[in-house]
Amino acid sequence: MNTAVVGEKMTQEQCTHRNNVQSSEKPQVYKVGIYGWRKRCLYFFVLLLMILILINLALTIWILKVMNFTIDGMGNLRITEKGLKLEGDSEFLQPLYAKEIQSKPGRPLFLQSSKNISVNIVNSNNQLLTQLVTGSSGFKARGKMFEVKSTSGKLLFSADEQEVVVGAERLRVMGAEGAVFSKSVETPHVRAEPFKELRLESPTRSLLMEAPKGIQILAEAGDIQAICRNELRLESKDGEISLDARRIRLMRLPEGKASSTSSSSPGTRQTVYEVCVCPNGRLFLSQAGTGSTCQISNNVCL
Image: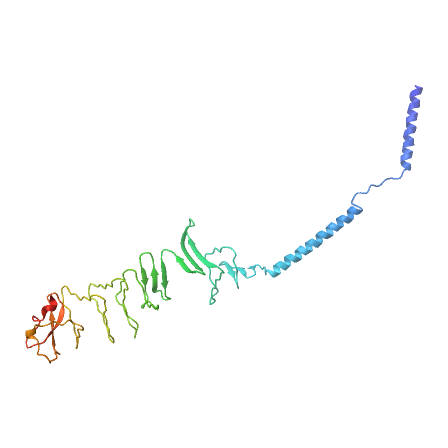
């Protein structure tokens, strides 16, 4: 019993002593935050970030000013209700796809390229239908049909796989060698320019002119010449051949020789001849007499 009382007293004294010791000590304060070199580094990074933000903002404003960014577009490019509008010179580094390209009213449309300009028309399967290429080597067009019309809509030129049509009132060939046709030519009228010669020539082959209702060759103020190396043949199957002129000259006709009994007396010069025709159609001259001398001088027909 006494032992328990003593132990309890000692415990109370220890508690009283501990409380006195704690009350005599000063209260400790713990600081929360970044101090020292860490704080200085944080301020430095914040300041650097603000400088970068200001530089970025200045560069953005400068780009907007230089590129002329507006609500309607950028630079020479304007966005309208009908599409895009470009003002001034424009350069395209990649293919341009557009439904319609037109210039300002009253202003020309100028296309320029260092190599060539190609215009391609394709179908839904990306197959080429029509192509137009202009380059240093020339002008090329590819398609099923090619047409050229006047401002009034009149057809001037048309070409397809079947035929080539020239709708102008006059086709003029200015080359020194004229026009060369490898096949036949069908035309209702062939005429030379005023005061110019018309020449139809086939250097190595034949020249054939056909017409079901007739062929008319007319030279109102000049001559007509038909020159050949071998034979010149005039043939009329059902009609006749008429030579209508005030004077008809048959040059270099052979002269038939008459027998010695019927020859003219020596010393006289024969100036009048008779034109005779052989059964084969050959013409020759015979000395004229009181009667016909064709039978006497028909040795040419042999």
